[in-house]
Length: 227
Image (cartoon, rainbow, N blue to C red; front, side, top):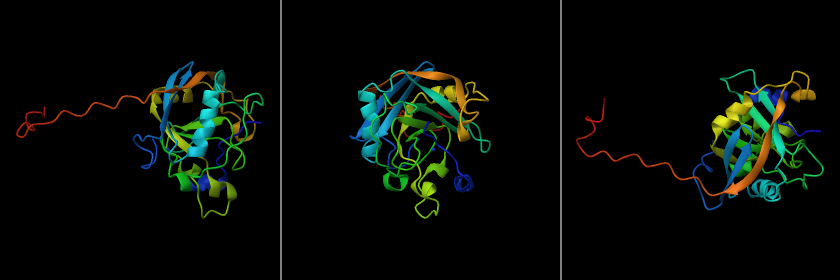
C-alpha cells in the first residue's frame, strides 16, 4: 500500500520555496540532484532544521535505494490557481528498498512550511514515513502542522525538509503528464501517472552557484537606465 498525502475534510477546510528559516544556504544544507527521464531536479535539503527527515532521505540517496524508482502520482487540486497540487515519488513501500520508519518532524518544530517547491515526506500515521516523498506545485498550508487541531492527522501535519533550487520546470512537466482514470486506490484513484516518470538516480551534488549580483548604478545614472 502506497503512503500518501491525503487532504481530509478538516484539512480541506483549512486549506508551499521554503520557510524564511530555510531560505538561503547554511553549512547544514545538503544538495541532491534527482535525475529523471523528464529532466533533473535539484533540491536543497535543510539538515539544520529537519535533521531526522533529511538524514533519513540521505540514507536512501547514499544507498542508491531511489535509483530505478519513479514519480508515480500527480495530485491535481480543483481549487486555487493552477498548477495546484503535488507530485509524489519514491520507493512505493517496496520491502526490498525501504528502511526503518523515521520519527516525525512537524513543521511547527522545523519551521519549514509547505510552499511551492517544498519537498515533504509521504506517510500513513505520523512516524511511518520511509522512502516516499512529494514536491509541492503550490503553497499547501493544509499540510503544515496544526498544533491546536482536534484531528490527530491535522495536528501532526507532514514533514517538510527542503526545497527545489533548480528544475522546477521539470516538476511542472511531470505534474502535467497523463494520468490513469482507473489506477490508484482511495484518494489516489485517478492521480496515478501513466506511465510513471522514471527516477534514474538521486545523488549528492555541490551547492549551485549563487546568482550574479545586480550591477551597481552610479549616482546620477538611474534615469539613464530607464528605457
